[in-house]
Image 1: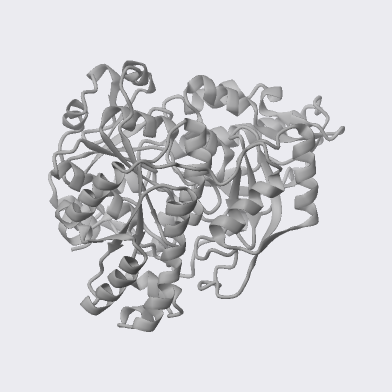
Image 2 (image 1 turned 30 degrees about the vertical axis):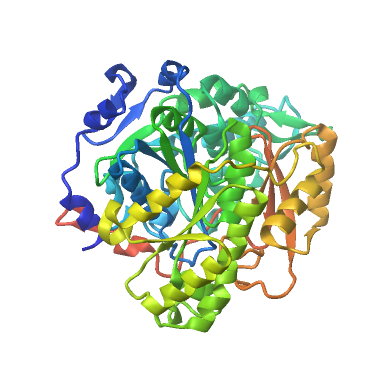
Length: 553
């Protein structure tokens, strides 16, 4: 059966049954229909006396274009922990409409390891991403309105972009203000996808509404005639932006197919943003259950690095164990086979591609110093011989491996993984960041590139070098760095899968996200507004007899 058919074959629990099981009083719950709800962030005050549970981060190797089932494994692991009578909860990101209608499709798991209602979650859900889009674009409108009415702040350069939650490459660069009105100021502008907006990053890193408002006010929208920053608070925009985000800021709760709780909130991409769900959702989950399973986007070089260096540092939390998801097909892809060829048994490419997995595990285990378990997400075409070869390679490298079959078997397919993860969380770890905040920006970027990616060096464009000087002169150099890079390779070249030859990372642009309190380094050909593929998933999505949605997978 297709994922959507499996999801519809399960009779879900009413959402108040799920929240009651978590012990959340009804006064803190706002239902959005029968099967989804929001939890008031005020409920965190009731949890202050509780200790944090254990935090399990699920990450992965560099994926193929279709993904490797990281969310599916995360859901299956949480279900398996609950099946073992461990109180566990999921803390996941919200899907963006960009990939839903693009190449990847939905992002609610698959098979018998899904969160539901999958159609709602993949589409409009509770409107959070729409609220973020509106807050972002309200600020953009207020900037141009200020210019129209005389520009009292003497803004010379606007850097704030508009956003939309769709892949639309035509909007990367546009001209606005072309109505011909007397006071209209034509200028070049552009759109980011909403999940790359600084508002999304702020939304996911803010600790409460007061912190959210403060950060929104600190957004730098441009620079004045004296080359000094102009802030959103100078336009008095932060109050209205906070109002638009007030309800969205409350974490969403849904359930897995097996009726276990899943808190789904916030959704920045990991290749162009910091790739983690909201801090308020993760902290709430840690207070509610003894085990929290969360994930970070794409491979460990992106999502996990940002989760550990940005989110954990910001939130004052640390993981007790990490799961690194891999598939045999992806390893063969990284060993030199095409997407068509990986369906066939091929030992040489599998052996070569395992280097990608070993590098990710080494980063987590020996650089970040957190215990790691490798989860092999099994596909039908995987042969026993391939599984045995991979198992032997990992055993030779003293790496714990678990073969998971959650797509086909749900929680039963992750019992071994759950037991190994429980054991890993009992190991004392010396969690370490990749850099200290007080180091120069260039040094922090080079630390990530050399230690995590394995690059020999980093090259900066003249524009990037000038922006780094400006940021450090303004006194913002102590922020963490968020590198925007392709998800498909350790390098900044999506086609350089094996990284056999020494490579450099090329930083072409530096962007200060003062409200989010990090610095973005844009590398290679990465764009903050993706485009649709030649045949987008949108072509397959429709209504069946004008009643049921079909085509989301």
